[in-house]
Image (cartoon, rainbow, N blue to C red; front, side, top):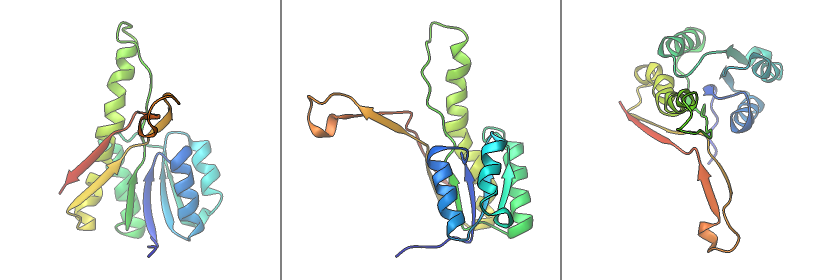
Length: 164
């Protein structure tokens, strides 16, 4: 059975999976809070259904900013039926390069803390006991010579389960 959501919050809406999820939700008539850092990409999504979107160019690692997103959304529409913490990054880095330490520090801020700062403002309002997040991931073939279950190497995967 397919469930339709009337109100949703979505981080990482600027591209890839987040953009596809936003398009799907909007096509089904949902009102969607689009959260991401690239205003132009969010605006292109909002143009698909101007009366059904709110744009928020907030950093998911910024707790105060995500509190403001949640407060704005809930003042307009009440608690969303669906919150998707899709924002995530996967990046290469060289631990020998001092400048890459900032890249390494930023990854858990977005991939782990970002899920918590996305969900936390909605927990009490939604009456949720547990929320689950699977950050974005991507894969590529590792080697065509190995067994089928080893052909894919996954990068940047992170998951978070946040009990209420």
